[in-house]
Every structure is written in C-alpha cells, then in structure tokens.
Amino acid sequence: MPKSKRAKLVSLTKVSKKTRDHKNALLAEVQQNADKWKYCWLFEVGAMRNAHLKTVRNLWKDSARIFFARGAVMAKALGTTVEEEHRLGLHKLATQIKGQVGLLFTDSGPQEVTEWFDDFRQPDFARAGNIASRTVTIPAGPIMRVHSDPPEPFPHNEDPQLRKLGLTTVLKKGVPTLDTPHKICEQGKPLTSEQAQLLKLIGEKMVVFRVALKARWDSATGTVVQVEGAGISPEEATQAESGEEDEEMSG
Image 1 (cartoon, rainbow, N blue to C red):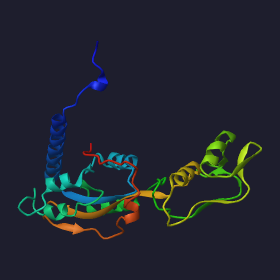
Image 2: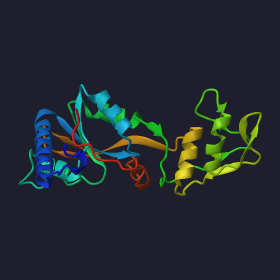
Image 3: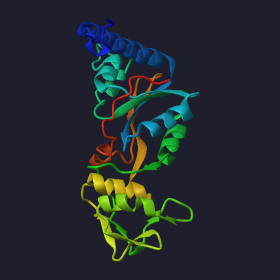
Image 4: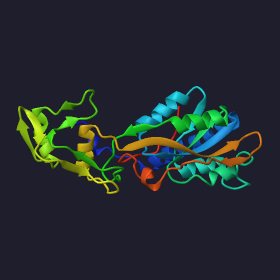
C-alpha cells in the first residue's frame, strides 16, 4: 500500500537550512547591488498592494533594482555600524530601515527619481480595518456601480448579496433599489468587512498605493541625504493587504 502524502514528515532542520540559505542569498544580492549602482534609495509604502509594487518593479526593471524584504536582513546587508557597513556611509541608511520599507538601487539622477515617485499613485479598494478616508452614502433609488462608464445598476441576481451586506433593498423593475439613502461608512472610522465589500461592489476606491522616498545614499561620496516631503502616515502604513508578506527579492 503506498504511503499517504498526508503522513509525510517534514524535517524542520531542512526548513531552517533553506531559510538561512535564502537570507544569505539576499544579503549577497543587496551587497552586489550596492557595489553596482550609483545611488541607493530608502523608500516606504502606503496602502501596500503586491500588484502595484510589481508594477513599479516592471517600470524600473531596465534602470534599477528593487528590494522589498525583511528589514533586519536588508539592514544587516548594508551594515548598521561604521565597522560593519558594506560601503562608506551605508550604515546611516541601514539604521533607518524600520517598518514597511524597501531599497531602490539605480543610476538615475535624484531629480528624475523623486519626480517619478511623486507622480506615481494607484487608487485601490480599502480592506476591513482600514480607516475610512471619507463618508460614503448610497442615495435613494437604483443602486449603481460607480466604476462603470456610464454607471450601471446592479442586476437582480445580486440583490441577495446586497441584502446580506446590510442594504434594505427592494426590486423595482428587476433592479435592486433603496427607498431611503444608506450610509456605508463615516470618515475617520474603521471599516467592517461588510462595509469594505460594499465599497468594492459599488466601485469606491478609498486608499492610494504610493511610494514615499525617505533617504538617498550616494556611492561617490558616501553621504546620506534625507528626502523632504510627505511621508507615509500611520493610517496609510496600516492599509496593507490582509496577510501581506514581504517579498524577499526582486527581479
């Protein structure tokens, strides 16, 4: 009788070894890129979404290398003290690696980089627990999908789902309809899972993925310059995807 796959034992020592090797590979990759590029930027992310981060990677793949990995590993690769730093001045950048941050290695000039990231914004749907950035109310009448162009009413077969999410709808000519306005959420208050689902269904995007540059290291001089501008607020920092995991390496 063949052995059950469910009964297969996994050696924890093998898992640990793989993790250690993976971290060592990341350390080496970060250091190799520190040797290769003119600048290393430290950035932080608001309303983290893997899909949007991959968009940034793709747009910069020919002129930069991006790492969005575990902070402790990236900091160790750069070196957090004068004695341990991989190259002159990198410890000043490494000591700032905290929270959801990443590294961008590039030869592109500072003005080009700052202008590009200042302009890059990707609206997205909020998740349960996110703070509502504005009050949203569905007016009385047919419930419309605001993301369609032009807006379209919901079909009759979605009426049960709308009711399940808290709307007191009635079908009028086969269209889910409200007799009175319904407030979905209130600005400044955390969203429930039902509220987040409703906002997504009607097409209301309440968070914005963006990348804020924090500091820049110059390989020629070893200096680290702090970037002035709007950083990521605590609210933006907590608007990450549920179950978001760090991506260890970038292509």
